[in-house]
Image (cartoon, rainbow, N blue to C red; front, side, top):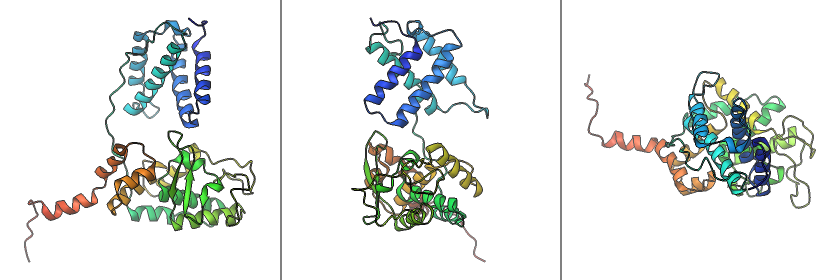
Length: 324
């Protein structure tokens, strides 16, 4: 068996190993967050030696996660509980494989059963248009925000994927965007609509002072597409960041009485409306970057427009209206 190392040091070694194996920054961030929660819980109970962690200890932590309440008094969602515990289970699997402990105490830990959740707060076309047109574009930040929301809505990309975009990832001639290192560390090319592309060009030329049309991605270095606020074209520009994107979208949505949701609502809405307008579910799968078709098919349950139309035409229970 390897030398005795405390849980905190093992966490650092584990995450370093994942980085070497080319795990995405998003995965690394989530694992770090989940493990820090667990180690904090262990620290308050004087548990630092991995050999002191048994299945009963992990079950007590699982109970703690189940009964935990957020600041607003709500419990953690089942998906969040599942993720926290899955990270801990993978951590101890690695500790065992590296022979820091003789056996894996988490091998028989049963995770919460996940149901299939439908996307919530799908917007209709009119609502999306009112939100987009309601952005004040008389200021530079408004032009940037409009370009961001148009891109999210047009491409259906995730917030982290948008935050990582570089100028050279947008192909103005083909009308496409290269999404690099998406979920699962996979690249994909997706279309971007003419209107979204127009706002991106406007942002780059009028706010970032970037000559987009003459940019040669083969010869010039990559620059962040959406910056956190600086206007000049510099390679040191800081990306707007996923958390800032969420705050931005959340504030704009609340302004238009959409009280839940942030960036992902544009992804859900794009997929649902495209299905209702006749897009094939396999195209939506490719657009969203889903590995499994079952992940995309959930939108067919939300796309209620066609079903409602058929229901109205064919269901025998109809309202009897008295003629005047």
